[in-house]
Length: 144
Image (cartoon, rainbow, N blue to C red; front, side, top):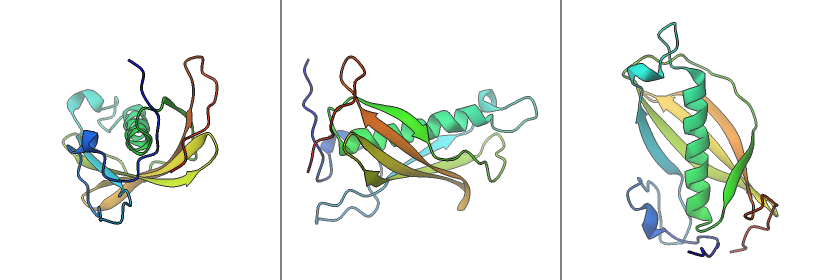
């Protein structure tokens, strides 16, 4: 099946199961929000959240937001701006993730991703994704 890549200008129906805090009728896409429960299998040998899981969840969150903004586009992560864990996380914590498009280039889009626990930010970074074709070559993002 061939997908048409386009830029979303309103609330995409495919993502109705996500929380759309702040959506307005002017067509602005709000931050995407999601939550994750930290389970025993996510712990490192010292009983804290293994950082690799958090990085994977941040990457996934940025991809979901980019896929919402550019439905049908094939997008891959090319980088994270900074990796600095601000607070430790224990089993049973519920983490809140929020992703918002920060910048758009010719072939890439950068998303600010913030992670918090009980209202306190524990991690934040920017994730850049690029649109590629089936051979992995960069492609221009659609214009709104």
